[in-house]
Length: 244
Ligand SMILES: [Zn+2]
Image (tube, rainbow, N blue to C red):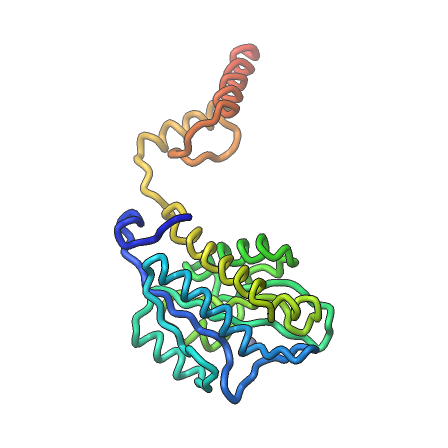
């Protein structure tokens, strides 16, 4: 397991993570057929996420640590004031129909860091639960809109789906979801830096190779060449020579 500390993340000094267990207090959130309240599941998952992050040396800010009522504005103000690096809001989905059972992660807009984080978290949640992939979705939500830092909102399955409700209320299910969220955050932190600066001479070589049919699909100039890639380039070269 990757241990994230300030010194271990190639120059990127992070991090302080805001964790927002949805609902609470007078607001139970959605309710399952067996009486499970969304607010309790959200808090349990959030507390496990907090535990795992703290153990990795990551600072956390929880918008609630017990069954208390907190307005959305109170939550976003708290996270903005604490200047957390990223926000993860934790919810369970619900429908009038008991059948929907997918996992999805929401962001305010596509194209930013929040979407990248959401994709990593979403992938891990789907992988861990085996539940259908509802994808990363763009939606206008208070917690993703009013927070000044990249924020994602996880809908950890459907509490209105009886089979998922059973798992969501179990401590094992909660632990697995929490673990997957942290793994996704780890993947996000560990991802290659976007748009690395590539030296011009490498780009020139790639352009010439492409113009001459040596490579036939786009390649990252800094990618390591696999054995198969090298052999394919050799075969392309051979074809080009034979044609002449
Ligand atoms: Zn909710």
